Length: 135
Image 1: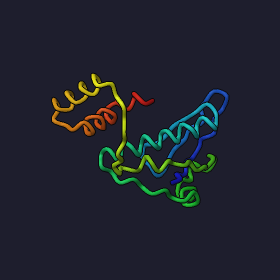
Image 2: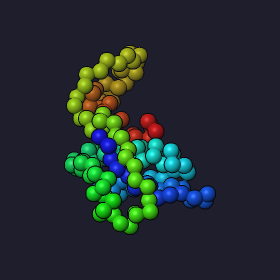
Image 3: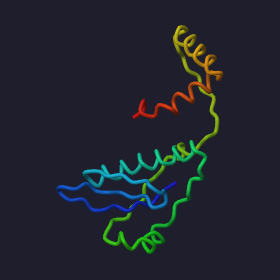
Image 4: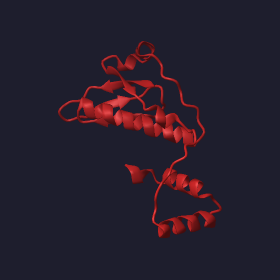
């Protein structure tokens, strides 16, 4: 999937600003065009993940031509397209095999039981509640 982005040109003292028109409130910036595009990819993935977690529908991308006509205020900006990894949209369950020391597994199972969750549910919740751990 590819989302169009509008990029406000940067200067020697100001970063390149990036807006993702199809995803309300999704924006980023970078000191170079390349950094701005990379940050836009991260912002889009984070926006989609947050929307999925709250049960929102993910808007389909609009064509660049349609957005350029709609947003005349960005006439002097550069338009580009950012690719989104389809995996961020996939909520399909997948079986995984992990290896842990027995003492860690014992602690994990005890924590899951204490919260009334399965091992898998506990691990998933911990990962979703601690996104900074993977940043």
